[in-house]
Image (cartoon, rainbow, N blue to C red; front, side):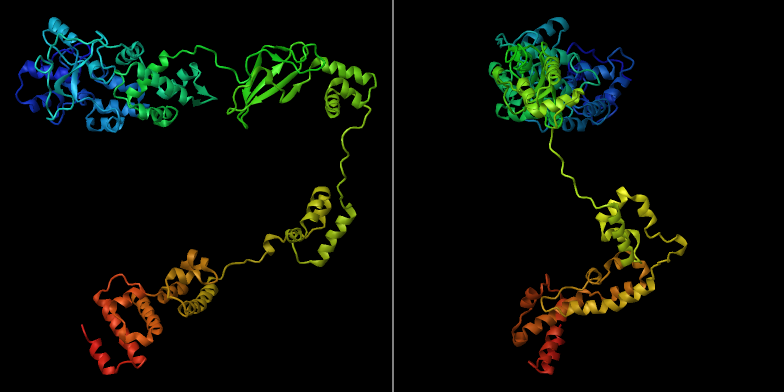
Length: 631
């Protein structure tokens, strides 16, 4: 347990506190000092995401110092990454920093593979260092200065300068404190154009006031913000073109701030905002998009899919016919066609109609609205219909007075329950149905013709007849159909595996002989090929244990490599019997497909070749024996 450790200053890195501790205590053996602090000798000097924080807090428990969680949230760069990580990666990174798995952090969060590279040197603000020297007598490294954005000190608005201290030290245990040696004081202070929206975001992030909640999800946050800015197409798709345009304008305005962001990759980055890859983007990209969105204000109302109101009424009986009197409408999205459906209702006559617009189409202009379908003709139209029917007008006369189709008049009259004297619609052609008597006679004829057939078999012979009887004369069909045999009278059809085994044994030799007698290039007779060529291959494939003789026969009939090689040699010798004496070993190897000529294969080829030469009477037996005994 340590008795001294410096208290951290405001916005100070833990790396800086440890470096000041080594300066104050004048430590010579850094590794022993690290072991006393972290209870481990392999703790490296890491600026952004240090680990072993729980061990550090435990060893400093006698002092009034921050807890492990406070070290992580106030004196590391984890708060600048936290809002933009997925909840799973966020918790794993937090656990790795509190624990001992610090070597996995940079790979897990994606900073190693990111196009936005870490700075080479630690950065400082000359004015901040001067204030630190006046207040505390020493300077230190600030957390906010080491994050890539905004590139200037938010407190003083001056450009940050590079020190001579490396961000990633060459030595593993090198903790370099801020001093006038590596942070050279200067009177030349450059002011830069300040980005107020970015500063507000960084202030919230540094104080854990942006996305500090456990349930915070950057993907949902983007959907909320873009919905408020009217940059969401339909229900979920983002307007990527507009977002890219806003970000490019923002980068041009603050070129020095976003110098590390590649403008050519901007469209690719924006395309990931609506996918799971949003969590792999560097915080610099997120802050560029968010600061650009914060400055963007919707100056004009986004045009509706149906143009600007009011909209016209299309009831010819209404006084407002073709007059723009409908001021409001309701809309919804059709699930099947994904079209936007607008419902327009006239308050004076009750006439209600719909208009549909596809997502890919541009908004409809004010004068181009036409009804897609009529939902309700309204009380004015219906009252007129009742009066016309009461006056005994004809169907076509009613249609002319109501400005609709005659069939529409008839349909609406039926819906209202009004009596009509005209005959409407087309007569349906009566489908021919055989009579019940004829159906029964045909079924009985089937029973006489096939007395041994079951009910299912008769149905398969004449399915149309069966379905007619089943639908319209089911009781008679059940009475006059063959009854199923009781279970006790059914024959026990057990499989005789011994008989099947003998069948397989009789069939296998003939199968092998057919395969051997093929005229083309020899194929190897394997167990699988033998089984596939019998009449019932599934017997040996699935029930091999019940066919012991057949299984043994398959094993014995299958060829070994040497047997297959001999058969290929015989085939080759039969093809080349006039040129056997001229065949070389490499020619035989190529023609019968041997990969490597081993001594065993050479002896086998030599033996079979001389037997073939003797058979075809090309060389005498004595010479064959001499060559066959050759090693």
